[in-house]
Image (cartoon, rainbow, N blue to C red; front, side, top):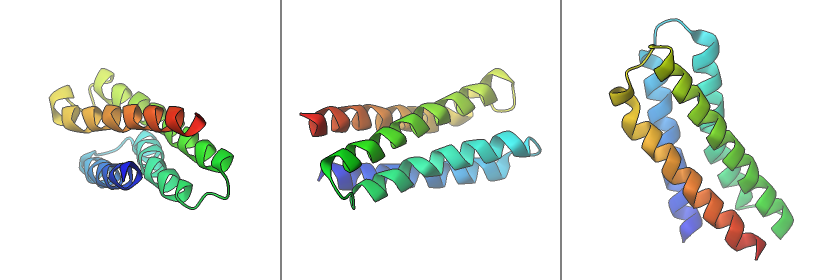
Length: 112
């Protein structure tokens, strides 16, 4: 049940990031990095559902978590560089944090 909610959240998040990146003029290299890390979160969560073992499942979720942290970095960079106003991406940033917290809890549970 939690995995399907996580899959849904990560897919919705990726769509929002893609739409956000479409609105940013220039800065192709960092918008590309943001899109890649944000979409990788959901891809690895989806792949974890077809893991060959518990260790493989945890590994895929850990990759998703790392991608989540990377996505937060790119979002912070956009804010600090003045490319995007903080208020414009507040919802996306908060959703990334929600996904991160769920991933941490899921990894901890799977390891037990």
